[in-house]
Image (cartoon, rainbow, N blue to C red; front, side, top):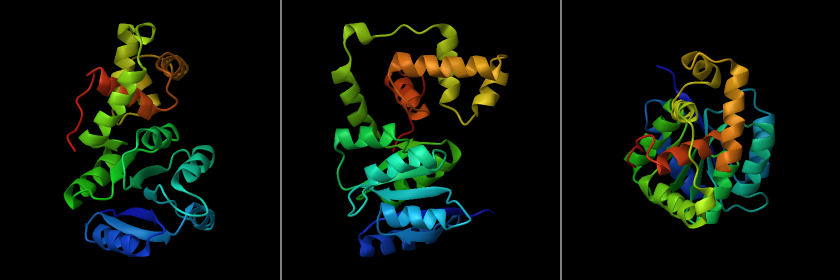
Length: 218
């Protein structure tokens, strides 16, 4: 059975060690390295031949915090799966992390069973958001939404949106919809513009908000 590699980026040594012990207790996961801040993480990442399957990234750190680190990852390692860790669920922070491509956002007081489920969901589905975090995000979106922002998507756009929320790659979506990859890219970019999002996670959140897919309970 394959073990998925985990990197921990957190300046609180005691918490990081406890988290490593917890992760190591799961059969499917193994911690490959720990960094105390974003700068140290990037140096270790660049000097490491293997890329971790998941990065557990703290938000508040000295030298280079989680938001700055996510900004760097978006430009340099956009495919790296990152789960943000924090002591609070501040709306602006969550949204910034998602815009930079974080695949999940966990509070540090989360139950170990939910934490394990989050790891599994990010590996298998590509994202994880607890009900609490999702409600925070959707409340924010509701506040920003006005009548002129309410969109009426075409059937094919909705079909693409639902498939984008699955584990399928864009190439597989093109095959499923019997369209060319170039046409699929057009759908994606069009929806990014219409929905004012910048990533696939943004599409997922829109689909959740409008009940186009069922949200996993967290």
